[in-house]
Length: 380
Image (cartoon, rainbow, N blue to C red; front, top):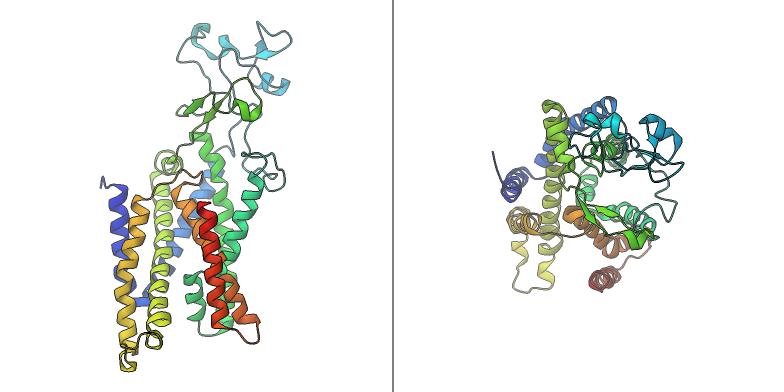
C-alpha cells in the first residue's frame, strides 16, 4: 500500500475504536480470541522455522585482511596463516578468502570482526554479572528494575482487571490468568531466540552494519574501537527479506494482532473507568449533575464518547513521539506506563484487598504521592 507509519497508526486506531465502542467487552473478547489464535500460531510457527533453518547465532568472525584470530580453534576454522607483523599470531588468510590473493579486492570473504569468539542465542550472565552489558556496571540493575516494574505494574493494568472482573466466576478468572501466563511462556521463549538470528543477518558482522568510529575506546580502555549502530528495523527486515513470504507475513499479522488486542483493551478500560468511576460519582462533587442523569444508558454512552479523545491522544503519541532511549520510543513508553501504574495504583489496589478498613482518602494520597514522586524522578 506504500502507507506511511503515521498513516498506518491512524488507520489501526480508527479500526480498533470502531469495533471497541460498537461491542464493548464482547467485541474485544471475541476479536482478541481470533487475533490471539491466528497471531500466536503465526509467531510460534515463524520462530520455530527460523530456529530450525538457521544457525542459532553468528559464528566466530572470519575477519578481514590483517585480522588476528583470538585462538587456535578459530585459526583452524578459517585456515589462518602466520601474521607478517606479529610473531606467533594467526591472521586472516588472504590467499584463501580473496580472489587472486588480492587483499584490496571488494570480493573478499570477510566481515567486521565483531564476534572474535562468536555470538550466543542466550547470555545467561546478563542478570547476574555486573559487567556483562553496558553501561558498566549498572545494566544489571536496569534489567532487574525493568522486570520488577513490568511484573508488579501489570497487577493494576486496567485491561487485565476488566477481563478478570468480567469473568463469570473467580475460578474462571484464575484459570484464565494461569493459561495466559503459560501461553506467554510458550510464545515468548522461542520468540526470544530470534534476537540472535536477527543479529546473524543484520548484526555488527553483517554487510549492512553501520558503526560510529572511535566512540567507545575510553569506556573499554582500548586504544580505538567503533560503536555498532543497531538497525531499528532489523526484525521487520528479517520478516520481509529472510523468511518465506507466507511465514513472514503471518508473523507480521500476529504482531499487529497483538498490538490491536492490547489497544482495544486499553481503550475499553479507560472509557469504562471514566464512565463508572468518575461520571457515576460526579454528582457527589458537581451539584449540577442530577441523580437521574446517572443511568446505565448514559454511562454506556459516556464510555463510548470519551473513548474517541482517548484514542486520538494515544494515536498522536504513537505517531509522533520519538525517543533516544535504547529501547526505542515504544519500549520506553511501555516501561514508563507500567512504572507509573506501579508508583500510583498498585499500593491502593493491594490495600483494598488486604486491609480490614480500606480508606478512599488513603488510596488518593497514595496515588498522588506516588505519581508526583515518579514525575519528579522522570525529569530530575
